[in-house]
Image (cartoon, rainbow, N blue to C red):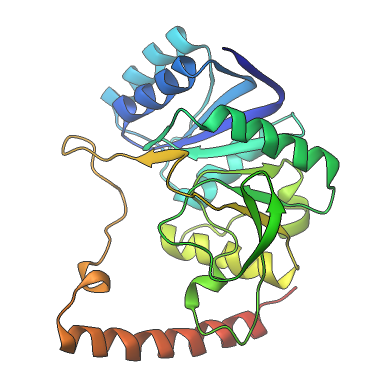
Length: 259
């Protein structure tokens, strides 16, 4: 079965992981997914990687946007997004792989975006469930932010993980912050999303539509801390204290964020 989404541009950010990019493109082809355009935004990968990218470009017919200087994830997303001309953008980083159930649910997501003009984003993947949700339909839940919810995950109504958004997203929420680390880039956008009262949906079975795959030859660009999942009682106590501190800190940051 084939799925054609002419109103969507697949935007992929890339840095030094051409084999991961190939795996992602192959997965979409195997699922029968075609998009109005595919854009790969590269953040000054090395010479050999750029050579690989041009080879892939000739095979997969995507638009490649490069830069001579590595400016970080925020700038990489910004320059890729500026090149999008379709109404909707499916944003996916190169180390993700869509699963069998993605096309049908993505079709529903596009329909929801078209029918509900108040939606800004629809998320397809996460490490953790968004803490406060209300039923929306077709397996999707609406994310609800509450200052009083003690879970710090609530601040991430926006996430860099695979999602559908309107191409006009920067007009409402501004460009991504640049010259800072990828985690801070994501969090700054998450704060702006909340401050501007963004509205989004979250796929309830959030691990069933994409896999995130990092190999030893092309490892993740972002290091995750193991202490977050440790079971040692002392570690658990420290983690709990940290999360309280983080909740307070993030709340203050949100209050002080300019609209």
